[in-house]
Image (tube, rainbow, N blue to C red; front, side, top):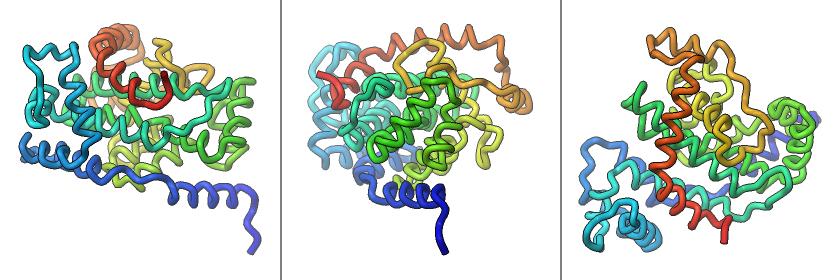
Amino acid sequence: MVMNPDTLRIKRITESIIGLPTLPTVVSKMIELVDNPRTSAASLSRLISTDQTLTARLLKLANSAYYGFPREISTVNMAIVVLGFNTVKDMGLSLSVFDAFKNQDVTSSFDISRFWEHSIACGIASRMIARTYRSRYAGEAFVAGLLHDIGKVILNQYFNKEFIEIMKRSSAGELLEDAEDSVIGTRHSQIGSWLADKWNLPKLIADTLGYHHAPWESRIDPVFVATITLADYICHLSGLGHSGRIAPPVLDQQLWDIFSKENIPIDEPDIVRLQDEFLIEFDKSETFMSFLHENDGTRG
């Protein structure tokens, strides 16, 4: 049977996903430990200490001026106590993602450094909103926000010619998702979900990456996905970084319906307030942002 061009494209993308770098074993185990409420700082410390690079980065962050500890932090265990489990997880995953996709081409339509800035900002915004309205998922929210557009990075690195065409069409006014459908036969959201599955990230994360532009289609937790959708929109409004999209994604009424059905007090008039709260949160996280940028392989 002869495959049509779209099927061939999707098959090629799927095969490339299989060949993508894997998440470092120590980081995968670290995510599992942090998500386990019975994990102690000592057990997490033992795991991190097996990776020299991760250990060095962790100690550097813990000794940064932002945390202002009065004496030098020289042990991983103390660094974990100072930073907290979730900050350690956020740092480890963020840097692993940067390492996995550090060989990126910078084009006029896709600046990878600004893309990472948008992604980290979305992680911060997602965590802030979740902490207030979906507190049990605040830890996962940063990860989901950070990775929500990772499919674009995969396209840029492994399908650069097609991605440049998508960006050209988008810059000319075509909806990004329509351009993706036309050029590659699938979307960055689906590709990101494939990667999350490959990295054995929680199903909630894979589901969010797949449906962050249509949270009402989520099969696991539409409210959580809608939180990331809203965070992404707020980051676009705030002009932090650049996702490769020329205008903020349009928010569908179904997004607000999701919150309303769950009696979560978020509606369209709250966007300005949430944006103000996010900018304050972002300023507080400036040191964490700077630290990640130092290690993302796109500056300097």
